[in-house]
Length: 565
Image (cartoon, rainbow, N blue to C red; front, side):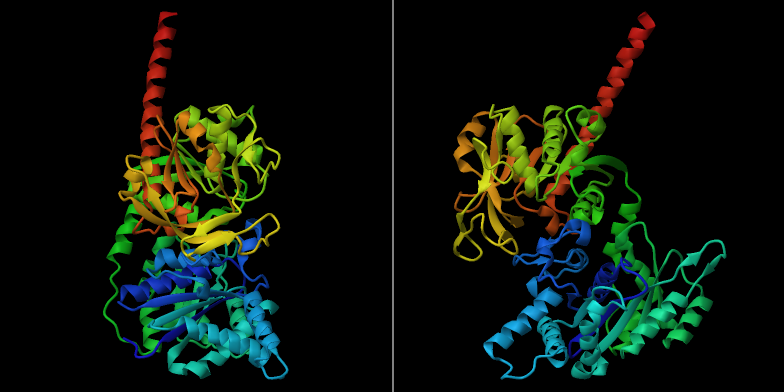
């Protein structure tokens, strides 16, 4: 075990989207499998204070932590691969760093000195890294962006200095890069990596290990060439091969010797890694006994990274049921009265995820109606739950103009509305907001308790009466409409401890219909899948079986009619 915290910095070169987050998470999983305590930190170069107000098409999913931080989606990878639970101190942006430094300057903390990028900004970055390290054997720090970007220079300068502050025996640099295969020439090309490492070395950082993203294992001669031109040892050139299941990454890295080399450089001794759980999970992932098709009806379907945690939670639920999950992404803006039934025909479950804005709302409501009327398992998350209430109010309870005041301020039946005052159990105080409140960081954010009613779908899925789940929303169910909707069969199965906030709704006499105000996908893990996703996929598999039986019966009837005619 290390006597002092060790720091591993992960940078990326050549191009973006190589998988620095997955690489960092996989390294964390390998270290944890050896009995070491690990935490992770993401440093993002954009000027936004956090990604909370950013368009998912630009930045992908916003991952919410227990303490209510809106963070980069890579923190979702970290939590899925490593047992640690992260918070607002595990994600810093340029905006957050500069905001802190400028606030200190306004208070007079710098005693009239000229505030500069070096040392003030770099010192603030280093302080954030040290603050994260308390009581951990290892801190893995991912630097967002690509080497050569002007935005990330202050972070790179800070981690260059960090080796002198923490001691060179406690700091290791890993550079993730790209090795393209040129098919017409039949060759792997190392030049992009050579140039990327040259750029990194020009600012004073010599990588200790190269992680080479590629579609095949690197032969020894390619590793030797990279080692020679990039000034590392051949055993420090690691293949980061494309995989069909992302949870295979730790196993690939281990076989390539990444964890062993990392520990050798940092002079840390541990026992052998225990990777049996990962081996078993990957085997089940690659060898499902059955499959099911789930329609994900949303507005960000052109970029599936917008629903990263959701996608993974569905896969976790599938593997728990020994099944592959085929996700059919449907842009809700394309659904209308004339086509929604044909578009959704053949799916075994419908899921409407969270989102913001009015685009595609009516298409989502049509998808919910399809699931309700055709007895297809339905799962609504956050906005999906709110729209399930609206659909039920309109088409079952007779409130034809029912809506959310977010989308129709003049609706006579605001079954979903902006709650301006409520008691916050986590902060232990009354919170206030209105339509003029700032957008950033003003939602109901983070983990909150929920009480579940007995003998409900939620009760049977969770197997307990009290849960905690993560939230990210402004609008709530309007309790004035509770009695009327209950009379028509809507079940309110989850509430906040004081009963003033509805957390879960269900429908009687339906195989599986559940909407939750929270985001359960943020707490699903490969080895510990979220119970709602496990139960939803179970119901979808049963739905597939029922649909198959009905099809066979209809085919038999049709054949008999044809024979008689």
